[in-house]
Length: 208
Image (tube, rainbow, N blue to C red):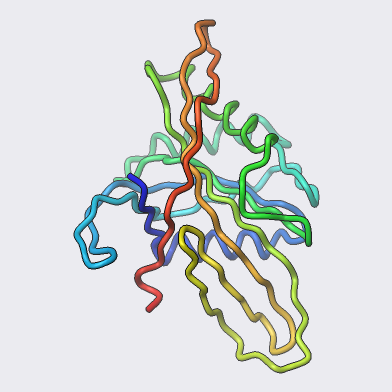
């Protein structure tokens, strides 16, 4: 499914997590399910992101984030995977900060996703896996012209652009991209290789 809908609560979690941690990177899990929505005047089967759970014990730097407390990460992972609230873990999210940050996957990002898929492969019998990674590129902004506090969006072909004014003269520009990462076992027990990536088409149909 190419189309990914970000629900209000998930969008709030993504934006708040990235802005709170700035200028260090943030990351976490994405939870949701599949559904049918009207997009571009047609009923389509879509992926719906319902919640974003930010990891709280990570080791954060301006240009990378890692599992600072592995046991805490594994507790969080087991919790989101086994709490039956009608959602499943569809993937994860992380932010890129500063002027050189972009809403696309880096080689390091793909290595991180491969590690997450290997963790899944240890507990599930899978022939292949697909993981959705959402990247939020964030840049702090200061304006000479007063802005109304709040947020506005810009819809690109696949990504979402957003300006968040937290004060009349200060805020953030944010671009959100989503990528399906495909992987499969490489023949050695417990090891997986990335086999491809596809950029998803993100939408906030509730934003008007």
